[in-house]
Image 1 (tube, rainbow, N blue to C red):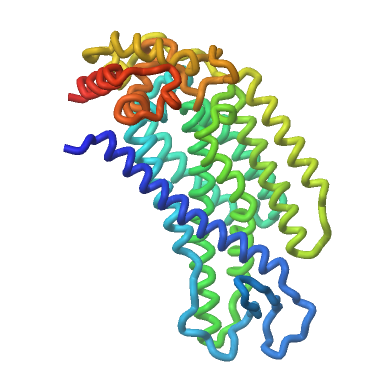
Image 2: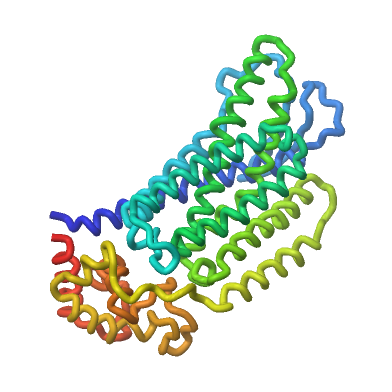
Length: 406
C-alpha cells in the first residue's frame, strides 16, 4: 500500500499547484483589466458610442479595445464573464487550508506557546473568523458608514490590524499570517461572488431589456473592486510568508502583517496612477522601501516568540511515546540540530531553516511529520546529506513514524 503520508504530501502538492495556476489567472486578469480601465482614452467622441478605447499590441497582433457603459447596438451572445478564476482560487486555497492546517492542526495550526487549544477549537476559530469576518465586512460596506469610501478604507485597515493581533494571539506564527491572507482572500472572492457579478448581471439584464440601469449597482461593484485592487498584493505576501520565518516567527509578526497592507497600498497607488496617466508618484517607492526596512528590523527583534512547553502534548505526545523515539532523538540531535537551533552552529546560518527548531525531544515530536517526509521517506534533509545521515538512520526514522501511527 502506498504510504499515506506520501499520498497526503502529493495531494497537497497537486492542490497547491491548482491554487497557484488559478491565482495567476485571477490576479493576472484583475491587474490587466484595472490597467485597461484606468488607461482608456475617454476624450474621444467615438462613433460606436463607447465610453473609451485603447489600442494595444501583443504577441505580434494589434488589439482595438472599447468599453461600453450602455448596451451596444446588439448584445453579444458569447459574453465572457471573468469569475471562475476567483472562485477556483478560493476553493483551492480553502482545500489547502483544510489539508495542511485542519488535518495537521496539532503540527501547523496550534502553538502551545501561544495558545494551548484543542484541534477542534482552533479549527472552529478559523472557520468562524473567515465566515464572520466576511459578514461583518459586508455589513459595514452596506451601512451608512460605508458611503464615504475614504473613511471606510481607513476603518477597514484598523480592522485588519486588530485581526492581525488576534490571529497571532491564538495560532502559530505561520498559521496566523496564512489566516490573515485567507481572511483577505475570502473577502475578495466573496466580493466577486456576492456583489460584483450579481450587480453586473442586473445591469446586463436591464441593458438587454432596453431599461436604463440603476447607477447604484455600478457604484457598489466599483467600491468592492477597489478594495480587491488594494488587497491583492498583501494576500500574495501572506501566502508566501509561510516559507520565511523572518516574516512569521517574529514576536512582532502582527505589526509586520499590518505594515504589509500599507505596502500594498503604496505599490498599487503607483501603478494605478501610472496607468491612469496622472503622473509618476515616485514618492511611493521611498514609502514602500521605508516600510520594508521597518519590517526587516522588526523581523529580527528578536526572531522568535516565547519558548514552547517542554512536555509534549496532543499528537506530539503520541510520537514521543512511540517505539524508537529515543534513538530518533539522538539521530536528529546529531544530524539536524546544528542547523535547526535557535542559534545555529552551522556557518552562514543566522536562524533555523523554515523556523524549525529541533533541539528538544518535544520539538522533535512536534515536527515528526516533517522529519519523516524530509529525512525518512525523502532525502531532502540534510541538504546534500551534509551531516552524513546513514541509510539505517533514515530507516529508523521511518520505523518510528509508522510505529506512532499503527
